[in-house]
Each structure stands twice: as C-alpha cells, then as structure tokens.
Image (cartoon, rainbow, N blue to C red; front, side):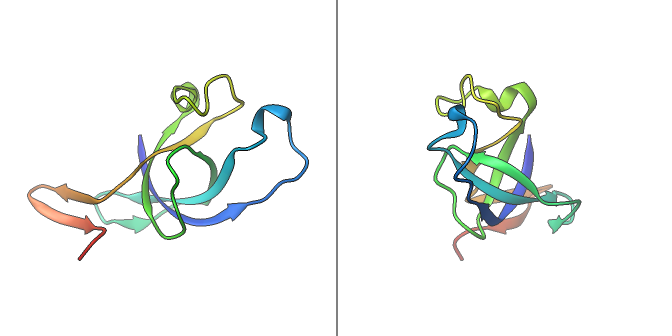
Length: 98
C-alpha cells in the first residue's frame, strides 16, 4: 500500500464500458518518513469518496481490484481509505483535523 495526496481529477466521456460511473482522481505519492510528495502524479479509481487535498491510502496491481467498486474492472490503482491521522515512531506526522 502507498500513501498519497489527492491533487486533481480526471474527466473522460469516452472510456471502456467497465469504467463508466467510476470517479478517477489524480494522486501524488507521499514519502512516509518525510511526509513530502515524491515521484509523479498517478490516476486512481476512488472507492471511498475522497476529495481534493485529502491524504489517502492506495492499493496497486491486482489488489486494486479487490473492492466492491473495482471488482472485475481494468484497475491498477485504487483509493481504499481516507486517512485521518498517521503516527510514525511515536510522533504524529499527519492529522486531518487540528
């Protein structure tokens, strides 16, 4: 699993039938030890109702097809949780609500 921040969305009117009705979001992976964004943006299927700016948990590969929404869908990356807080080595590194 990976941690990422939602940074945008994708709108596509022409797509394979199995993607109809699915919300596609652009996410930027986060390095857990520094909590800084890293790498390049990715597109993920949203299975939990995430919004712009939220920190989320991702599943990739065949694991991304293990949710009710993505089962039997052409998915390689799915948002499976919205993170409320994270603690690393006894220190809170992220808290959604201050």
